[in-house]
Image 1: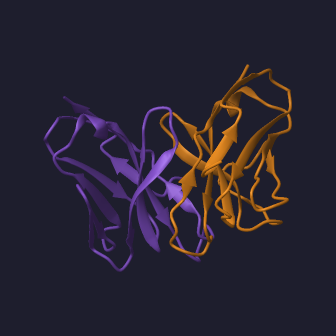
Image 2 (image 1 turned 180 degrees about the vertical axis):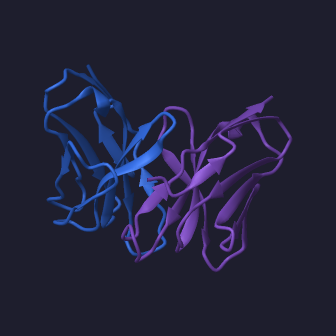
Image 3 (image 1 turned 90 degrees about the vertical axis):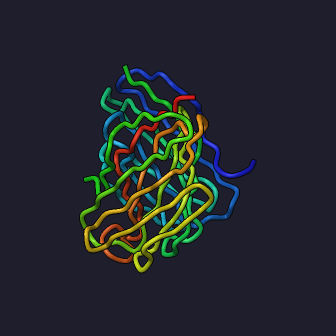
Length: 114
Length: 114
């Protein structure tokens, strides 16, 4: 593994189903982020974690939950998917949240909720 | 809500020409970053400019920052077909609102015609 990986690459999901998007980084970065990208809206922050064991809400957290049990993994869960959650989801990490480090992005997960 | 707003939304130029994209933002920042996204891929960091800097260069990229006008510009000189991508500005508010999170604009889609 080099950098950030996300799984699955794409998924079609029935409304009401539970889904977990996986994100793993091997750079030992403290901060991790989940964004959704929608046409015409750019990237919007869903949840973030400044360090293992802590999480916080971003701009659009409703309907999503996260956990940060260790440094490397930051899964995003949709408890009961709805069509408005159809989007491309990007995970990102950053060395230190309070530094000027840049963010490194994963390749994304394309999710379609029917 | 979006902090940065890029202008134009789309830009089409001939190979060899220069491309200029602008970004405006609303609140004070710690730094401003530009990212590039190829179609279907994650974002890649291009350049970071701190709030006390006015201009920065990296290869064919030139970024300016005017904190009094709350605006930045990204200039790509001698464009190539491989520069075709979407470009996003992202503002880092530092220790203020957002807890060192990045807020992304909606992006400029650049097409470089061979």
